[in-house]
Length: 274
Image (cartoon, rainbow, N blue to C red):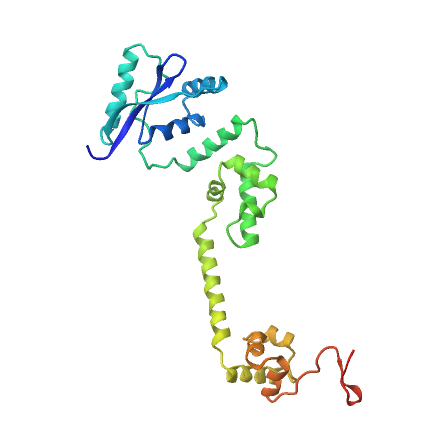
């Protein structure tokens, strides 16, 4: 028959009557999704809540196995048949209107689903900030951290408010106009620059380092300290430590008089530690 799916029914354990007809590639999994009470079908949700209140769950029964190209006709047929027989179904439509398998609900639908979830728990979002204010704060935070803001960048109360108001973090970022691609490209550019500096650190020759050190000494008019060199030179002082063992050795190799080591007293000809 090719790719197939199932027309299933939800059975009320109290009287063994079918109360809902639907379609799914995995009826058992679909039953678990129904029990999360995310359905917009109020009649179905009310019936499931009644069962949940007395500690029982509906059972699922496969009615027909059909090809995916014909499930709409099959679902309509069974809903029409059961209603004609006087069965009190909770289906609001005549069938054939479910999601196609693999299709993801829109961003707006997902946001509403999560908002309804918070509402069912009796948790109301705080109203002292408007949606525009929250989105503006996200934009400011993105500018401040120079990347896509994370929940960890906000106080607990703030990011929970954003989640409650917009449903998901990604939904809030989208509505704030924060494009992931821009920040990912910026991160990759910074990473390439870092790797380039790292390659320079390992590939630079001793002669190039000594030439840079002599040039810096001519510019300053004296032997540069490590701090002065870090601020103005193209290379890190770690390159000199890696090749020459110390900053003083590097200065000596360049033909410069090393600066007096910090914490050493050279008066009287004898070196003594202060």
